[in-house]
Image (cartoon, rainbow, N blue to C red; front, side, top):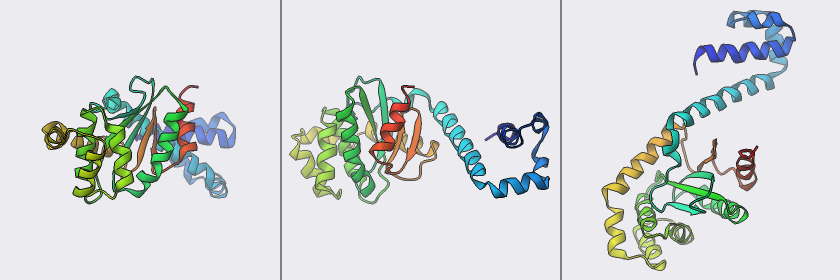
Length: 233
């Protein structure tokens, strides 16, 4: 965050705290004032609000820098309405228990909103999950991403045997699927997803972008729905 922006937010905070225009001329040196220090120590929640405002601003800047590429899915790696105008991006790993627990939340969101498009970002960070991520993208290329995604979690944890079993269970063309899973296009997509996640400051799965709101962790149905609904206002 640029120092100028931090100064602006702090000045606004001080102006609200003390309610007079003179606060607008204060700088960081004003924090040495005993009255300011005492007030902020008595009201630590204000500092938390400022920290959150800074974090939110940083998130918006990161999202803006990534542009539309973040919302453009790998071919077929979409759940819900592929043409939907409301977009949820999910970073997921098949050996992540929190991703598995979030599956029901995403399914519920899809059922509740026919305009929801869920862009899936395969981000294999747990041991043994890369093969599943590759096969999921290969399934997407055959128009069966959601079937594989749900079946893989049902059969997990991800291993060569369960990946093969899930792919066969949903009726993939196995020769094509194996070739696609090992393709350069899939390798590039996995690196791309890693780059997106790191750029957004995520350090684990699941992670979401609800339209333009970043959410880290298994935040649950209500929080995801709230963020998606707020995009309409």
